[in-house]
Length: 289
Image 1 (cartoon, rainbow, N blue to C red):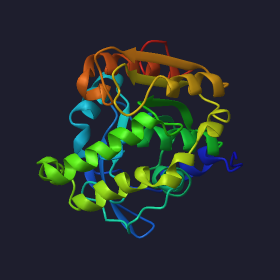
Image 2 (cartoon, one colour; image 1 turned 90 degrees about the vertical axis):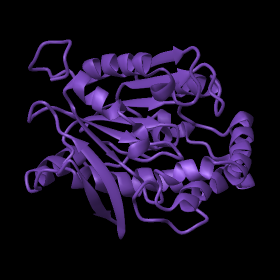
Image 3 (tube, helix red, strand yellow; image 1 turned 180 degrees about the horizontal axis):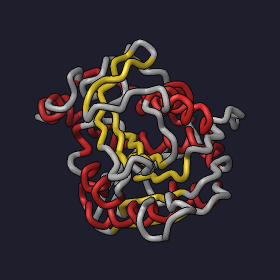
């Protein structure tokens, strides 16, 4: 499952040839135009945190959380909208049921090389957390120093399917579609690409827990106690399957999006994790170097 390619060498060599990223723009990856946002680090040699959004997310829907994360850590923060989301190119529907695997093994490696990723973290929410887990388990990437996952899914639970079926009705009968259209240029493409895959009966077999045993960097799981899309079973799977250190932050009163519902507690947990995972051996502990 692990790839033998040394991405740290490839990324470092490529980054020396690339122009610096503009604060916003589009990347051309596999024929798609992918919207991105780049918050530059406070020091030229600082690490980067790459953020991967949820199944209905995009660059804009992260709100000011990336800015607060950049200010608290000093790291560079890179976020992008996957194909079908935000202002990025649409995708052909229905999405393949292995769409998260494809993102992690085909698209994300090209993203990291294109932006000149040299060292840092992956930070994912929901689908994005699952993509981060697959990437970390499938790649021997020595640039990667940690994986932070907000409300990850490793298996499909009944509560997930029930809530995803309910939100389809909401999307088709309320103002939810209009609200999402503020953020997604191709709103039906974004919604049905995600919703249709999760509600396909064959998707009940989706299981990425095997990837967890191959992750070789520290892991943080942030879980809302009242998550309507997943239970503590996801946390238990991480603890059972990971051989790497696993930190856990359970936030009471938060649902599926702790970074929006309890941003202070979520940010504190991620900053503490980042300070430990990204500590530079040449510098003192406590601040991301």
